[in-house]
Length: 175
Image (tube, rainbow, N blue to C red; front, top):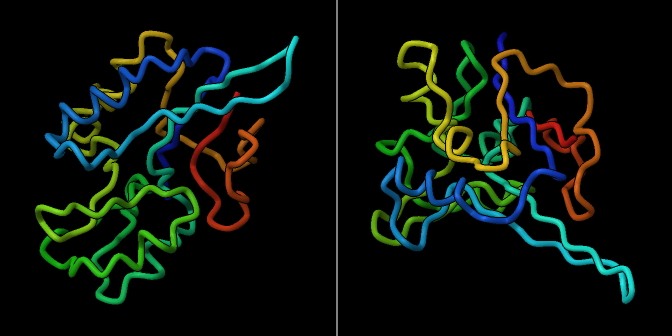
């Protein structure tokens, strides 16, 4: 099975949130629903404080906890590319997937009463094979890349509070 995945260069992310804005615009999500967000981590002390920005979305895991927790089978993983999707017609809004995901990807939409998440811009990457996810194209620092041939050989230098990758085997690599 093919697997699409993210590559995030933490040294290049400036925290500008352009990726999150592009995602919101591309997917027309309500103000309270963000599929991609930028987390700020502060560490160190004077005279060496440190600030790190981490762009995060659904990791389209090899073993999605969200999919395993869904009681109605609304969450599926496509065999063709490994993209994890939520069928809005089947979702009952129980939020089990929200609680199960160790990365906080599924988001409850108050207006629809359903759960949504990053779709890896499936409508773009499946269009003709040449379009990138909106966040990738918008990233001014070129901190976000994606690959159509992700191989699970570890997440690299993951941020301090990143959940244990052995839980779901996320399709993300930090460089």
